Amino acid sequence: MAQFFIARQPIYDRALKVIGYELLYRDSDVNEAQFDDPDRASSDAILNSFIHIGIDTLTGSSLVFINLPKAFITDGALTPMFQEQCVLEVLEDMRATPEVMSGLERLSKQGFKLALDDFELTDATRPMLCWAHYVKVDVLGRGRDELTALMAQLRRYPVQVIAEKVETQAMKQMCEELGFDCYQGYFFCRPQVVMRKGVAANKAVVFDLLNKLQQPDVGLDELEALLAHDISLSYKLLRYINSAAFSLRREVDSIKDAIVLLGIENVKHWVSLILMTRMDDSKPRELITTALVRARLCEQVADLWHPEVRHQMFIVGLFSVLDALMDQPMVELLDTIILSMPVKLALLDYEGVAGDVLRQVLAYEQMDIDSLAQTPLTPSQWATAYLEAVRWADESMVAIAP
Figure 1 (cartoon, rainbow, N blue to C red):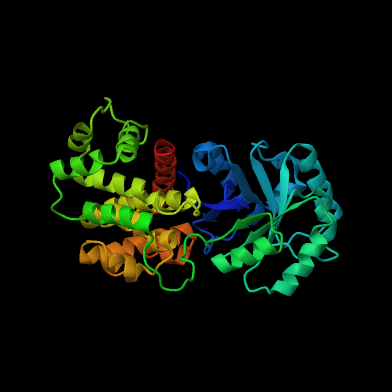
Figure 2 (cartoon, one colour):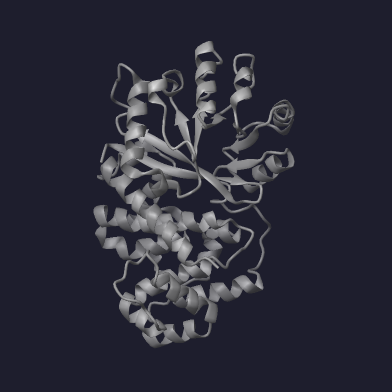
């Protein structure tokens, strides 16, 4: 595999459904190598990654938003593929020159959807709106009055406006009030700022089950009894185990059979995942997908870097979104769950070896190349592990769907 990093970030509509993913791409040599034609080098690398990986591996049937180097716009020979799913993002430094406008017209007539990324409305960019389907606005650090004025201008055009870098629930709410059509950012990976509150009744039941699952002395009979008292949970677990995510060679037709076949620790992990999907229906399922990708990626990174903590990493990755899922401080939540001290310290302060692994997995999500350089993993190892985690997580989410 070529030496590059690739990840994805979801884009939500107003109903909090994922409409697509922006692909986050970094060439591993971006901070060192000098290219005679950097746009062409980037174009070749991106195309090669799609050919070898496949769009469906990264985004399934959702839209895929791709940053488009200028060479793709002005050179017809570099027309990208996959127009049914692709939204081509025109970068913020692009201006409406005759050459660029001709390229945008050509791409639009070929069936591509176009997005203007990090858009600033000026005389040099306004003409491009006539070919755009989406406009992406960086809302971080911008006030309500400024955004209100910009939205009034953009609403004169038949475009969907995406708020980028929505970092908090409050920012998302403001963007919703201002009429943005879609949202992108880390607002669902962080807890909403709320007054201290107790755990709601339905969440308390789930949390009690999670607590029991994390007890180190839970045996086969106790685990089977725990599952047997919840028909829905038992059904989901069996369907999950029979899914492609596990690639088992024979079917599982009883709870005890499933536990014996997979082992108590694995079953505890899978049940924890299923229980977390019950936490809060107001949160998008993508938050659980994020947790599952992290859990799987944490395991694989530990395999390559710190195998001594692999057994801890699934639950570390999975529970890394617990505060956002329940809108409570992580320290309060962990006080109510029996977890080993290394796992708690990793979740709270990224301490210890498990904390190092989690920190680097989060760095990969955000394409923090400088941080990733501190690990012994190559870009190819990171990319391969991430793509496998995405595939496994997507299959798992299908298996546990209602």
